[in-house]
Amino acid sequence: MVVLIIGDVLRVSVSDENPVFPTQREDPDPYAVTGRGLHLVRSLTHRFGTEPRKTGKSVWFELDAAA
Image (cartoon, rainbow, N blue to C red; front, side):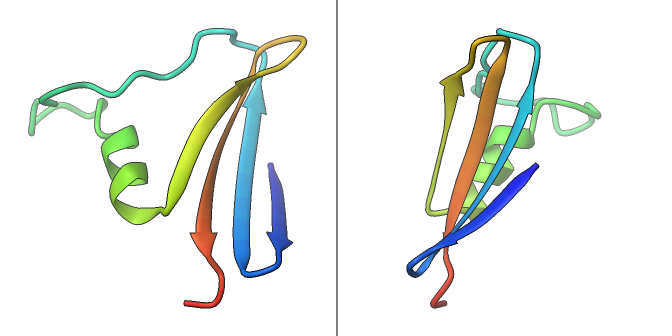
């Protein structure tokens, strides 16, 4: 995990060796134990995304650090 403050932006990034990018489920089952991660990230952050790496991917989100 990498945590950076760049100006007024807090950026958190995690990486793994799995090259498959996460996908947001349209309508997650309310009783399922998985499937809500990107919905939570989208609702709590200002920006988020994924980036390919040599081996795997990096998933990141940003928050307004001034708030």
